[in-house]
Image (tube, rainbow, N blue to C red; front, side, top):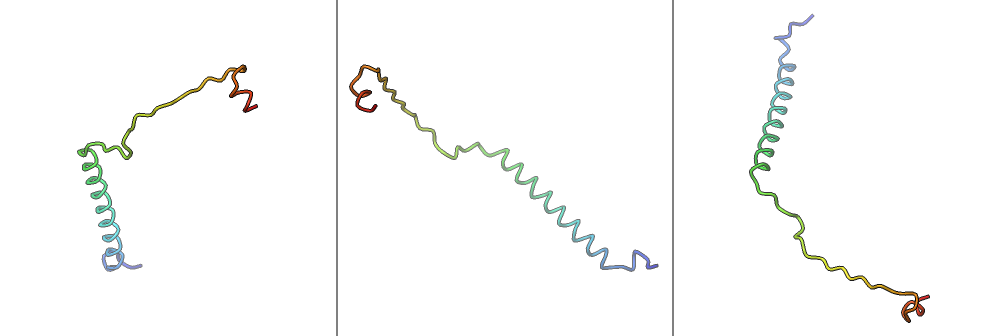
Length: 67
């Protein structure tokens, strides 16, 4: 059975995985901190909306024309 210290490629793989995890955690923390400090930006500006409603009675000429 081989000694773990003599398997240099295993240590290299473990070090690479550890560095990738460390970079991922660091980038996530930086993104979280930057997003927290930034003011919320609206993606679409709000415009006032107008809604028009037209009441139609059964006695009106528009209703009899449509039906």
